[in-house]
Length: 257
Image (cartoon, rainbow, N blue to C red; front, side, top):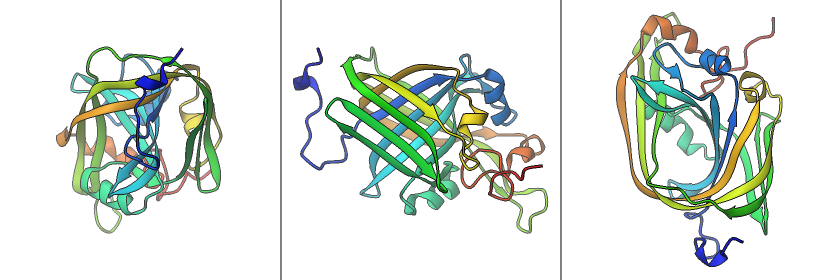
């Protein structure tokens, strides 16, 4: 049985030690390849990684959901960020403009009540993700996790014609962690159809691999420009749904033909 004395102990109401809800599922490698701009390649395993969280950003709680896919850049394995759906407006535009971090407005419900964990994510009136689980045993992480995440930063030419005021670059996010504390979950992920967050159709769930609650030890995080992408090859990936990296049309879902 899980020893509650070993779990992180926090002051009631404290948000800085909320665990991350980490869910991994397998999709189709071809589905991931369609979302990656030339120069960023699908990873060895076609996994989608979901992180649902409540973290302090600008000294306020930010509920969010991060969607990434396994992807390699210049031989380094990592994860390509499809989007961060968050409920804190102040952090959206500055994150996109400064670093290319693909944030967009969304609402997340995420809580634990006794042994039960629940998470739901909503955007533009659609619920696109639902997860329910019960808490299992402690699942220790061996070693110190290290993580690479890829964002893309670019600025289209003023006036709307093809071209850039700032050509597309890959932004590398490098995080280092201690193992922290992790609990396995016995849960079920359900992806729901949404034109604004087409995860169910563009990254279909083929096999649910794992789900955990994780209290990481944060050690370091750097955000740097890693290299430039081919501007012409990137052009078909310029138009997205909002600040995400889902393919879009003038910021909205693509028009149905």
